[in-house]
Structure formats: structure tokens, C-alpha cells
Image 1 (cartoon, rainbow over the protein chains, first blue to last red):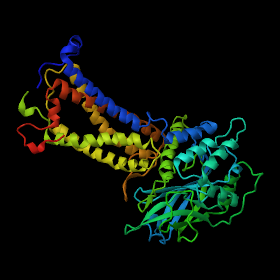
Image 2 (image 1 turned 90 degrees about the horizontal axis):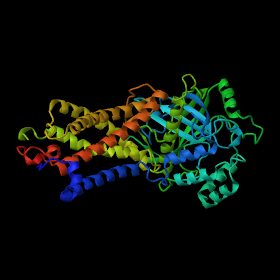
Image 3 (image 1 turned 45 degrees about the vertical axis):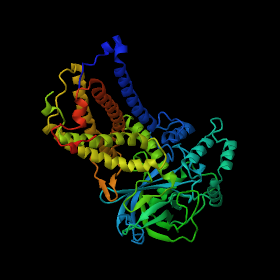
Image 4 (image 1 turned 90 degrees about the vertical axis):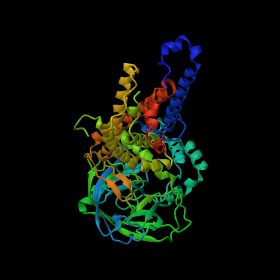
Length: 360
Length: 188
């Protein structure tokens, strides 16, 4: 037990007589530093080259600065609300309650990509549609869909490189074509996306576009069987191509409010079920056209609200928020989307909270 | 030292050594999951939420044990400032272990997120959805976690100091039972 009380003064005066104690003190220091160092390393402070969600969001912020309170990507959008009615046809592959013949309220958001909340609607062929389904017992399903069935890249790292290559030149406001060319030639996986966009002119409205889940997901049925699925919201409104130029800056949201003034808009939730051997971890590759499709129910959108005070404003449409009966696939983009959306959400909500009251 | 009172009670030691690895794991999971874009992000978040609630349940039980079982007194020759730091840091640990899960649960509630535990079970929100409240709680969750980690490091250093330098029985009072107790109760 205790031979004599420990004294730093004594230790400093006669270090030679206390070598054992000094050694043990050093050992304590080493252990504490090792545990602390491991913590700092895991937190990413000591690994600045690791691709973190913070770095992805920082890259978006280099495009045109920080637009306080707005999403770091898909910043310009409009809130919508309505409901989804399942029909039971998908209940054989997923036991999620949303697929039963019940009505589930939804809060949605149409948007265009990019970090600029006042970008002209005509500047991009891409439209996005995000939905939050509010299930019983506090469960939710959130999905963020694009109007392209495949994504340009299939890894978070390539996405980051694409962002870096596409950064607008401050002088021209446009990306450097040479950098983009270098990126695309180094990434042949982007070709299906580019081909699809060339062959499919963007729609004239948010309402007459189909929106795709991009990533694959797992559906689990009541017996515990797993199927890999992708989904699409396919509009009842007939497709018409957008005018190639001369569109008003907000024509998509203006057109949407005109349509909703006439009556509700409907989409069918089409689930596509993968066959054994279909790739489930690569968002750049479409599945063959003959895969089984299930019309799982109808989405009805009734109202729209400006996002400044709409219900969608404070929702992080993280595609990994899934109800019982759906799970993420092994697609590496899903975790990266979840992580980066959280960083964007935390930053913009913090900015929103620091605004003077009444200016939200 | 009085032999009969020198050691923590069996329930106190049980909760200490059960919770210690869970809490340290929780801190590493927490900082790791928000710093990675890999699939680990999803795996770690799926562990973080239910583990946090489990720690909350354990800390409530442990607080009852703490109140009903007197801990052994500190050695009488410990300087006054060290006794102050020892008592203060132990109550700070209890406070943080109690607060962290509640702040996390409230934060998800205020942000409108489902508080997902395991397939088919989500906890109800405990505060209304509110962006200002979310922003405050989200910041608090991080800073309280940093404070908890630093307090844990201090606790670890102090435990080793008692065990290796002072050799005053404080470390062994938590590491093992009294000699009178059966050997099967040896833990840690």
C-alpha cells in the first residue's frame, strides 16, 4: 500500500531517487495522450485529407459563398403537401405500413440543384422531388429523388472530384470546360448519365416529370425476405419538353402554383424489383427494362407554399430515414448523402436560429 | 483504512465496469459517425441512438445505487484540492451521463427526426419541433460530449495515479471487492 505521500516538490528536488515514480507518471501520460489522440483522429481533426461530409459541404460553399439559412445544395425550391395512398400491391415485398391501403400524409419539396437559392430555373435540366411520409407511431420515410434514373457518379470520392471540377470560375460564372473534360474522361462511369440527359430534354414543369430514387434500397416483407428495389414517382400529367430558352427565372415554381390552383397533382409510386445479379451498389447503372414493376400507390399533391415559411423548410430529406420494411442498400452514396445532408442541415438551421426573431 | 468500508459495493462496481466501455465507445462512435462519408456512418448512427438510451436507463439505475450505497471514503491523507476535484468530477460525470442522452433525444425531437431505436420501434418526441431549439441542442450535444470526454480522460488519469503512484487503495476499491467477498466477484 502507501509507502509515503506523493509529492511533486520532492520529485523535483531529488529526481534520481524517484525514477520508478517518474517512469509510472510518464506511463500515465502516454496512456492519456494515446486515448485522447485516438479520439482526435476518429473525429477527423488529425486527418484533413480524409473525405468528410464537412469537406463536401465546404466545397459547395466555394461555388458562390454561403447563402445563410439555405440548403447547401438544391437550395432553390418550393414546399408542397398532400398524401400518399398505398394499394397493398407492394405489401408482398415490403411490410412497411405505407404500402398498405392506407392514407399517409406527406410533406414534399420540389427543387433545382445547386447552392444558389435564386438561380434561374432554366439553368439546369435537373429537377428534384423530396418527400417525407409521416407514418404511425412516430416512424417516417424520407426520400430525395431526381428526374434522372441514374446518377453521374457512384462513389462519394468521385462526387467530390466532380464538385471540384465543376466549380464556377468567379470571372465567367461558369465552370472551366477543361477541368470538366479532364474529370469526365477520367470517369467513364458518368457516361450513362450524360447520355440519358442528352436523350431526355427536361420537362416543362415540376408536375410532368418522373422522379427516381437514384440509389437502390432493400425491401423486407413480413416473412423477412429481402428484395432490392428502386422507385420512381411517375406523373399522371403528360410529359412536355421545356422551352430550350426564354424561360422566366422562376417559371417552374410559378407554373406549379398555376397547376395546383386548377386541382391536385398525382404521381404513381412505381417500385422496380432487381433480379438476382443486378448491381445494387452502383447508382450510375440502370437495371434492365424488363424488371418486375409494382404500382404501389398514388401520391396526391394538393398545396404548395414558398419554402421561406413552408413545412419543408426545416426538414432534412435524408434518404436513409426509412420505415420498418425498407433498409439502405450497399450503395456507398447513401451513407455519404446522409452524412453530408446532416452537415448542411446543421449549418443552415444554426444560421436560421441566429436570425433576429420574426425574420425566418 | 477500515477493511469493511474500503470498497465500492458490488452493484456500484457492476454498473461502473458495465458502463465504462459503453460510454467510451459511445464517445468514439459519436465523433466518428459525423466525420465520415463511408458506410460506417449509417452503422454507427444505428448503434448510437439505442446505445444512448440504454446508457440513460443504466445511469438512472446507477444513480439509485449511488444514493442507496455509500461509496468508500477517500484516503484521509489526500490533499483538500484533490478531494474537491474528485467529488466535483464524479458529480459532473453523473450529470453529463444523465444529460447527454436527454439532449440527444430532445435534439432529434426538435429537428423533426424519428428517434429510431430498432426496426419497428421509434421513441416519441419529447420536445416540440423547433429550429432554434434544435440548433441550440445540436451544439450542446457536441460541447457536452467534449466536456464528457475530457472529464473521462481526467478520471482515467486520476485512477492510474491512485493505482500506480499513490497506491492508496482507491483504484482497487473500484477494481475489486473486499477480501471478505467471494473471488467470483472480481471484475475489471
